[in-house]
Image (cartoon, rainbow, N blue to C red; front, side, top):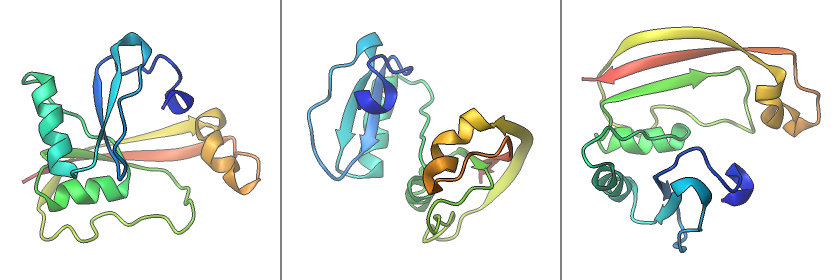
Length: 142
């Protein structure tokens, strides 16, 4: 994990990572501990809720992560960030989630500069474009 987020990650608390492989939590600076959960989304959420001492729990991830939590009925609110970049074939939102109901709460449009998208824009070898439009949609599950 240190290679991805550096030796002092910005979380400063426990982080529960969905994983197919069990491993010991790596030592990190600043109070961050990554716990690798192999038992699925419900187990990861239960551990995060227990560690949060009643505070809200935030879940981060891509389409597959959101789909798993939606299918399990474990989401109160979610934000979808849309950026006009597809890596490979991409992943579909709302696949195999069953019947869900939600309402749009808010939208936000913004432009990201090239340094913010460089790591994914250069994956195909092309230089990153100067600006990318992004839209964030916030939903509440009903």
